[in-house]
Length: 428
Image (tube, rainbow, N blue to C red; front, side):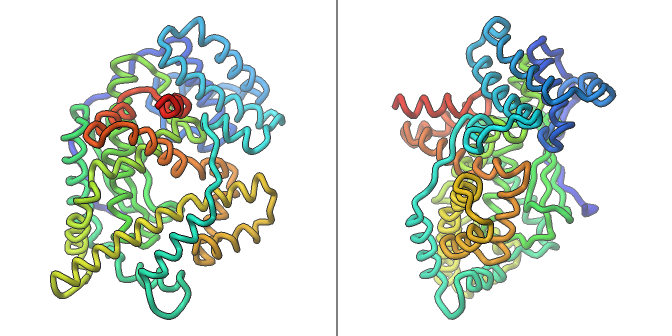
């Protein structure tokens, strides 16, 4: 990690309410499962005594954990009066029960397991969508060589130098924070620390520590492309993960004493909502009509040459945005690839070749994507970004544009579930 960090705002003292029996047992189950499935708990800011208890106790057998999940599901109707809270706990516990069953040697078929993990099923996309996006990129990047080679050459000219990253991030986070807080508000005293790190497999990550504090790390092992930085920052900070987590802590945990929200789980329904809102949220921080202006300033602050006159600079920015949009259209190819591997049973080499041929990935990028799809923890998580964004896009589109920000705010302050959002979409 670099010596310099950026601190946004100042956090306050942290006080955690006491959990009711359902929340207490949900937290204990989550923490115990995390000891069997390292990484299942992505963040914890609940009572320290519960975490200490789990760390020193004898680890329960997987069958016992599965029985605990089943027992908690059976208690919801009699112990939880609030139907919204009850529905949220129910889908989360269904996911935990599925994880515990797998540990106990009673795994579900892949698609059924995914459905229980995320309260939703992935949708296989028509390959024509990917081919059209690849054709768009091909037209945007004329010249000799493969599409992957031309994309690599384009990317090489849009990399933000590491020595410029902190200054660019100071400005960009300030911009998305100002726009997001003006629209959605923020709890008093939220804090965000930004650091440059190395030795990580991801490009960026938000670590929520509780007390209205997040750490946003950007991995400088990987080239940081200017065209991606706006989306990455909005996704991890405002109005994405950081703003979501601080509002959930302030309202769900501290105000409503829903202590179950003080543990953040991987491979649970909350992830599909969380990643979906982080994906679609950029439109409120940097709307499409503002993006060219923001990207142009980003390029200038990064000291990346992008044209010697106003017309060429405008053309470069417009092309960069079109390349970003086309690349985003290729994103759900990972869903198809995961289904080809885990449902269709195709050989990994066939799936890797498909990613190169249809999704236009370089051999290295296709190999990395396949590693993610095959990873024990992420083999299911691969769906949540695109499926979450697709679901929330449909949900937001149900209301006029001037009402979409108010609808989006519900995701930041309420306990919502994928099936609940899908029911609203189906009802029209």
